[in-house]
Image 1 (cartoon, helix red, strand yellow):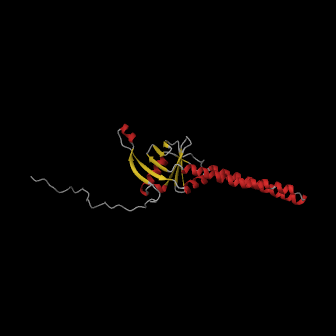
Image 2 (spheres, rainbow, N blue to C red; image 1 turned 180 degrees about the vertical axis):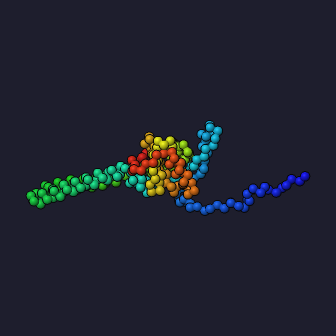
Length: 221
């Protein structure tokens, strides 16, 4: 008896459901790469765990935005405003006394609060530039996101951030920022992740970390 060569009625037509929707592509000039990878450690447990490998470089604007958003920067600005106000009051008093007494000594003394005000703006500007340059020295980042941890590789070496609800995370200006208890952190720009994978990466990080809603201290990358 001849075997029926026709395919079962439940088979999928090869011509169906093979259309791939076009999605927004990340910036082609950002030197980024995303791929699905297998967790080599999962072989010990006889099950395969997949993760996402992301390669990117931070831009100067992203690092500057991070520094401006930091708690230290916000705290310094508050101190700066009070300090500038007090020095302006002192300057007005010294100039007033100089006019009343006709003594040039008080006018000369007015240089002190003026110099102090200049330093209050110059010092944080220089510190911010040092922080930005230090963070940009890492250049390229290779980040592997697994359900239980994140592996980070830079030219400084390899380290891990465990997603065990001990680390904290937040999102700001299209950046995911993760903070480990050891004081190290990680910035992942959303532009570096394929649009169809962004929700998965965000969900993994959110599930394994505690949300941080307040501004944060600058971190060591």
